[in-house]
Image 1 (spheres, rainbow, N blue to C red):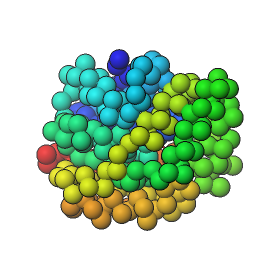
Image 2: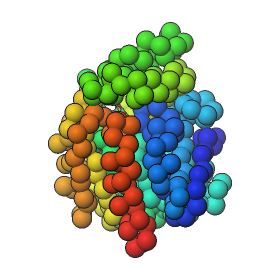
Image 3: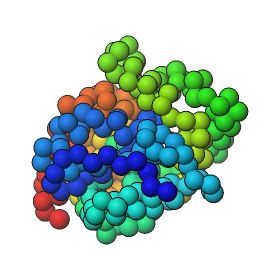
Length: 259
Ligand code: MLT
């Protein structure tokens, strides 16, 4: 089943992959900044944004990655630069495992290569059961806001209100799918050395979900990767939209032109 796909602008294609509890609109600022000279393509995870509910079967990011490739095929898009934030980064690794020939560059934001330890994995499965039991995502809205945003951003209505709205647009089935798929994801650390495309890594000094040193460790393991640390929480592109757009613009133009 194809996910919802949003396609703006013309030029070399860039695929944006959103974080957990959000949807493709997380990238609105970057699409506004970049779609003048690039084709900005976004997908919503199943059960989030405009996507249909998750399909039956084992929830995996590899399964969703195959659906993303099918969505690109449906638009006749061959190679893309991939920009993924957090869960979007986990998905970028799944895409690299599945179809590295489709990827011309990678921007990995606020993400990690490692799999979950037992405790966090259990927490994910508990949240999946909770939202299914409650048939609502309401009880996770404020806890997620507190984790996703830095203290300064949590009191900025123009940042926090749209984040709350995006969480509320996710269905319980979408949240449960994402948590189970992330819990099942493999460790991608060994994959990093095989990444041969230009790579940019972005970390947030106030990231409460994936601390900056863990994010930056990715760059240390990818040949030639460049990294940048910004003063923000987990959702770097929403807290510092201009800085992230500028970093992406500077990275993507040379990266997509040269490959
Ligand atoms: C995300 O922002 O995508 C998630 O918080 C990542 C995670 O739960 O590991």
